[in-house]
Image (cartoon, rainbow, N blue to C red):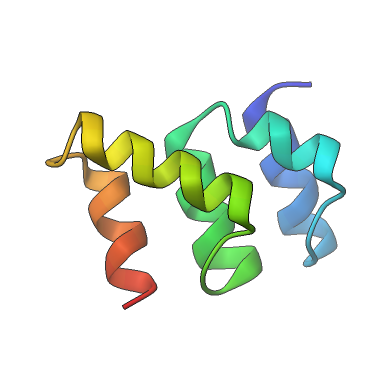
Length: 73
């Protein structure tokens, strides 16, 4: 399954996914951010949150990282 498909499954179910599907979403920063905004509606689970921090450190100007950290302020 690809990140887009896993995200769509969560969006259609309107609930948090099992960890193995979250791991798939986590391979794409954009879908991870959208998962936070539209499904979790806040701070991501620890593993996903840490991935976003690492991404933001590597690319502090990234649109998705900025959006995520604005959301959780």
